[in-house]
Amino acid sequence: MSLWGRVFAAGYDAFLASAERSILADLRGELLAEASGRVVEIGSGTGVNLRHYPREIQELVCTEPEEPMARRLRRRAAESALPVRVVEAGAEDLPFDDDSFDTAVATLVLCTVPDPASALREVARVLKPGGRLIFIEHVRASEVRLARWQDRLHPLWVRFGHGCHCNRPTLETIEASPLQVIAHRRGRIPKAPPIVSPLVAGVAAAR
Ligand SMILES: C[S@@+](CC[C@H](N)C(=O)[O-])C[C@H]1O[C@@H](n2cnc3c(N)ncnc32)[C@H](O)[C@@H]1O
Image (cartoon, rainbow, N blue to C red; front, side, top):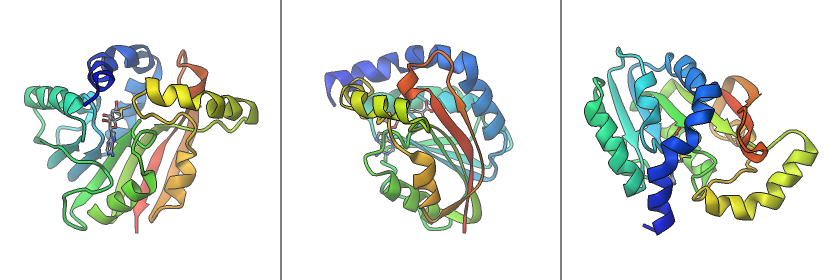
């Protein structure tokens, strides 16, 4: 693991704190309240979502491929009252059976996974038919001018954000996947750098 990868994991919660206060915590709480049954989360990071899941879920499997993140996630999981298990795995190759989860969760992660289309195919594979993906992602701007800035600054941001792509059209990638988007809304993360401020949140269903 690179030195920046370790620094990024150590500073992640502090870096996100203002965005959490302004909108993300409320959005996580609202959407994750709908999680039910067996739940798999991809790219859980430090485990920011843990406090937002309903107590009634049957099982929560948090996946995370990067050790410095996974270490913090395991600590949070140990303190949680939820039936949570941490699995070190990338979203493009989930070590789970087909049709084995009721809910999948992806928050601020499809910007970073190297191959989001493969990750979404995996999510669709492990979800039961009718199972739901809950997503909250920062995305490519719909305004041409801001999208151009996202493209210009992408080479710098991807290094600073440890693999985070600020210019991905993630909603369109979900729409092109085997999942069907059933609800979504767009918004902004106030006070975030403009290139990572456009936001999309919603739910998609496995067919
Ligand atoms: C910006 S963080 C988001 C963390 C958390 N989901 C949240 O909402 O705060 C992106 C996460 O994606 C993880 N990641 C990187 N490559 C991945 C992959 N191939 N599959 C799944 N997660 C990955 C990173 O290690 C990091 O924890």
